Image (cartoon, rainbow, N blue to C red):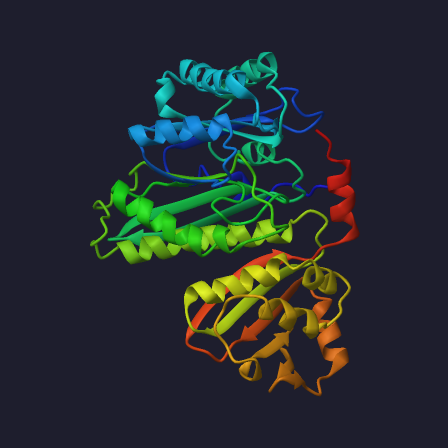
Length: 404
């Protein structure tokens, strides 16, 4: 049973000044809301990261084209249908979504981004979507973001949102974000859909750089099932209504802004891992002592996508053998005799062999909602954290029943 929306969820992407959102039920899905709009009432600087899957959906293609023009004000989206692998008609439908939304928001189509998520290979029901966009444009509001959160969800069980408030030169600044994603999630930017807003005044170059770093340490350090969708994106909008001095790459406030944006992205990524399809545990994989950050990330991703490691977590089995086997098939630099492995803060493997550990203690730790796997390669100073979840019977059931 879905829990009532929290105050933060209701006031997340519209927590920054000058943003409004809406989400309505247009009939693409049986019950849940499925068409949404997020708009800034003021001109925006916008940055994005998109899936690297070669079967790009029309929504991604059009959004990338519009983003390059540099005058974005809003995003219109639908869930329940990804409008991917739909040929020329799919491109026409995605373009039509931007036109309908722009008409109802008194904007230009090229000021719109468009996102679609859901089943691949089906045409959009444009009559329902057009009616939904018109209704959504008439119900825009601040402080009711639970509607847009629901409208971008597919197999998600939990709503995902994050808000950070801080000051820049005595000006109050807010960053708010929402996300959807529970399956078909694996980094190659991207992993899912995330919309982030801020009222900070920031140069495009600085915003784009900050987003790139934040994504690498959050959404690109996340894997639920090793699959990357055709439609994924992370979008960030900045409208400057905090009225701070413009943040540039060399501005003293840039590191602070970048850190706050990264925390929002990490928070959303953790929520996505916890909401992995059928998941019982959020799994935090910390790889330290690596020769390079890239090798630490490789170790983390390998463990995060190992079916044997994920099922061991589900079964609460401290199977360090599966962990070192996965580590051993990577290209990372290390001496096997220097590797150490912990689960739930219990050292299981050291000096090339099992330790004499307390089985009851590690089993109790693996029963917690969040489980940590920590690896020390003993090869350097680099460290990286990757997020994933366990793999349960329900994952198989959910995806076996999710038909095109």
